[in-house]
Image (cartoon, rainbow, N blue to C red; front, side, top):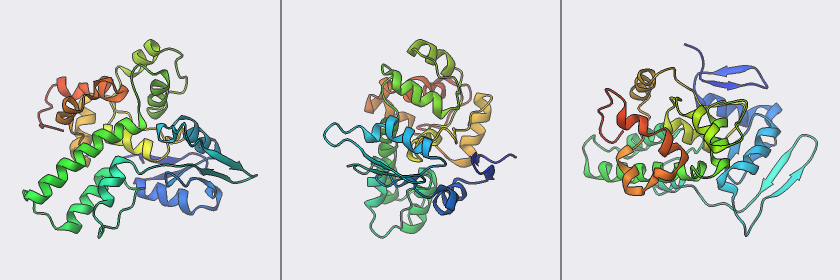
Length: 252
């Protein structure tokens, strides 16, 4: 099986996102290519600049980003609050939270750290809060279906090289795409780099197998309660799970 995580500038493949993140953080080639406000590393300065320009996390009309550039270093200073997932994991003070890991990995580590039995009441309440945070998080990184910029962000996330110029054209390109929603969240949390797009599957069945194997479940039952239908991802990608044949795992 081919590697899922790739650093194009270094021509290196990684079997896990943890390995890629460590490489981006530790490699001398990537020093300075980091958004300190989001605690994210990037493969190239161009990717970092694109993250600052396009990420909804940096939409702050009262405190615009302050960018300082040198020959090999780009430093971004901005006022940013923790994301919903960050706030959830940081609400457990004894847990050593690493924001570079995927939400699924972090939640598994949290469960192990807290020692929650499978059907415990505390674990169940935590799972509900975690699911709420996942839904809120998708709205941090991907905006409304009525916003062309949201479509362009989604197109880059799924590796579309020639980004269409209209919403209708974007919708046509995205319509038949099969991607994992938690992977999209992690792509956004990783800075939205064009050098590392989300894995796209050839069929719904392939996506389902991957989701079951990795347990990267997104709480579809929370979407109606959150009125997330206008979000470009939830509106046009999550609904495949509602109507896809054989998808019977409630709330996932």
